[in-house]
Image (cartoon, one colour):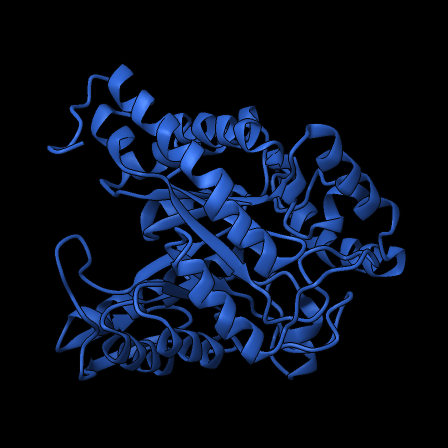
Length: 376
C-alpha cells in the first residue's frame, strides 16, 4: 500500500446476526440473538464502539444450523433507521432480485438514511434456494456473468436519468428512477461489495465492484488474492478496495482465547457442518482451477462458515492488533468481524482492541512518513 492508503484508518464491519444459530455452527453457548430488538441494540452499540459497517446476511430458507432468518434488505433498512452513522450492507442474490426493483429499494433506503445504504452482491452457493423457488440454477461462471450485469444495471440506474442496458440476463430501456441515491465526494452511488474466491469472482471485482470481500485467509493467502485482483483492476482502469473476514476471540491471555476456539470446534454441530460442506462443494470445485470459495476448507474452518478462524484474530488485544496491522499492510481496507457473544464482545473490542489498533496505525503512519493531522 502507498503512504496515503496506509494513512487511512482501517475500517471495521460486523456480521449482523439476523440468522439464528450465531456465527459458528456449534452447540457452544452463544449469547447472541437473531431477533430485531437484539440487533437494534447491537447496531447502536457497534456504531458507538468504532464500527463503520454492518453486513446483513441473506438466507431464504432453513438450512445448516440456521432455522430462522430475517430478510436482508428489510432488516437493513430497520437498522439504518435505528442508527445515525452506521452504514448497512444488505446481501442480495442476482436471480432472486430484479436489479431495477432492488435499485429502487436501495435508493429509497439511501435517501431515508442520509447516504448509508450499500449492497453485497452474492452470486450464489446454495442451489436449493434457487430450485426450491422454481428459479434456474446456473453453473458457476454463468452466475458471475449474471452478477456483473446485475451490478452494471444497479450503477446505471443510480446515476443515469436515461439508463440503457442490453445484456444476456437483463435489459433496461430508457429507465429513470427518482429519487436517486445520495451522491457525494468519492461516493457517486451506494457502495457495491462482492465476495468470491474463484478466478471469475476476482475478475468481476477487477471490472465493476467497489469492494472485494475475502473469506478468512492467512497472510499469504490474502496477499495472493489482493495481488491478483489488483492486477485485473489495473487492466480495466478500475479501483477496488478489500475487506477480509475474521472471527474475533479476544481474551486476557492467548491460552484463554485458544481454549474458547478449541471448545467451539469440539462442540461443532457435525450434521450441520457436513451439510454445509456438501452444499458449498459445488461452489469451490466447479471451476477449472479449483479456486472457488471453500475449495480447500477443512472441517474446523467450516464451523465458522466463512473461514473466519483462518484469519487468526484470536488471542490478546495486542496480538489481534498486530495481525490487523499486518493485514492492513497487505492491502486490507476493512475487517469484517464475527463474534461469539455479540453485545459483550463488540463492546470489549471497542474498548480493549480498537485503541491498540489505532495506536499501532499511528506508529505505522510515522514509519511511512505520513504526517500526523494537526492537533495530534
